[in-house]
Image (cartoon, rainbow, N blue to C red; front, side, top):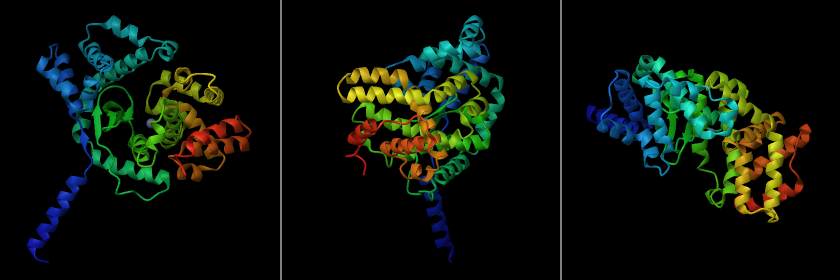
Length: 367
Ligand SMILES: [Zn+2]
């Protein structure tokens, strides 16, 4: 082959690689290091520096949000953790009990951020060096492979996964509309296997969007909530195979949050019963849609993670894993499989009346 053709091919290949490469955005991590380095030196950040921070990819969404609680808490906590001049406030927030956290989500949010930032302060140089040297693209490729292995399918190379936006907030990740948001310190602290499972969980949410029924999910809050129970429940089967207790001690390292999740998992059968009762009451107009949503929020905590994970585990134990993964985007199928599994294992199952109602609201959306 002559050299010109070879060169041409090479350019095409390089271009293809560039255009198909996943976007990893670390600008918010870099801005975080800039503002905290200045504070650590006992100096003040300029207004310009904070503007750069606000405009960075992983924080902008919170700055633009109508509710400024998140971004204000992030900034206040940066000062609290890195300036060393408000120790009583630090101590009081750190001593927040599990009960207070379970009751007050804002307090929980503040404490989780503070703990994360204090941890980052301890390992500051090492986290910075990780940012410079870690191979994010390799992580992405291995996480995609993990997702498709879990689903029992060949890698769907035609699917474009969302960009990854890193920031520094607290130990979690979110599949949002514009991107997948990940906490940088969490990824730093994890083992490579934990990172792969964690990202594969978020990729599951992202990939499921290709199949899920948007019209059903967005028709009302109830539909959205029902779908989310399946969505989070199956996703947790990817990265929480050792159970919540193990996950929240070895991966997330937040034992208090772990205790909350473990108790929610234990009470999942009762909560599922409560979900059934309130939906049935709603179906005969005994309660209004607003009352339903209010009750739902009280019972189905953390987007339904614990209830969904409990259901998925029972389905797997009963031997219906293949069926669960074949219908991973169909919430009715998930509830029906749970019921089949629950009857087989003689644990709490949903009533025929409930299943008939669920069928009636889903049947036009799912074949
Ligand atoms: Zn999730």
